[in-house]
Image (cartoon, rainbow, N blue to C red; front, top):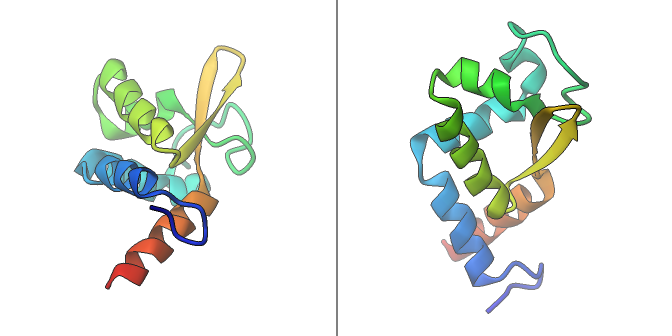
Length: 110
């Protein structure tokens, strides 16, 4: 089953499951405004263009690198973030198109 936007029920469920974790939800909120939310960390690359370095996310959230990597992998598998390698660093930014589609589908259920 998919809506006219092509978002399948499975894709919607994957996104909602990924967002159901409070830490992943917090990270997604921070990534909405990466420039101000991560202002305390010197950017490695343009935060608007490529996103936030995973090491900065890890430092801000205060969890082990492996835990943060697992959380980011879950968000990426659900399509909610996109990763870009810059040198040895992985950067993440929100997939705004998918987030809008998820929001529209959820709003259409009510």
